[in-house]
Length: 274
Image 1 (tube, rainbow, N blue to C red):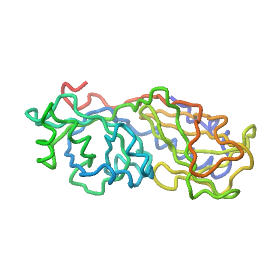
Image 2: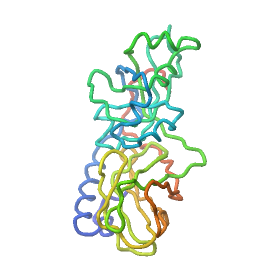
Image 3: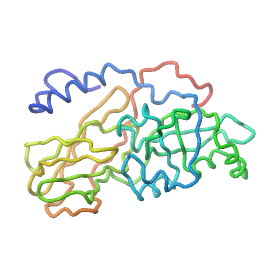
């Protein structure tokens, strides 16, 4: 686990130091139960495109995530955008209709309906069904389910940084994080010119989009504060954006995130679902 002592905060400056130290103290005192099984209900959208315009800001690219198995999650799972890109395994309790495996979904939107923890794409909803019963499961509309968070797996795929169309050189940069692996959340982000130690903080604009109006000149590097359960660490992407970065382009960060959440809940509720 990270050392949340003042020595860690020494690497940060001014307001960023105060903010992050306070944030880490909150995280370090929390109990992580992401992998525990929870009981709820799910509904579905008839079109996956409804989720691609969601609060996470992935746009039409979301349809290509996880073979279109997407979900809108309630605010406690959306976490003001930190939950964007999180993966969950969901299975329904009706064994006559549903398989024991269930379906794996990626969070791309905020579900504002408190009647269900998730609203799924129809493809993800049907994937919970036993073979040949996909249309039957759609007729139910809402199902009782159990779910747990699971690591996201993007084989041979690094964390990607997409420059948003709203970016304007030289004073404004907005980026979107994609293919965030593991069972993690990015809770803070810094940017600096490659080779410089003069870091400036970025703010979460919405969902998976971060921005700054203090853009360093030249090629850019990033560092992320990544949490997993009650644990966390810095991840440093040393050279991400070239000096001539362009709006609408996606760049390879050169790093993969594969951390699994450290858990503090025992025993987990969920029966025999391993």
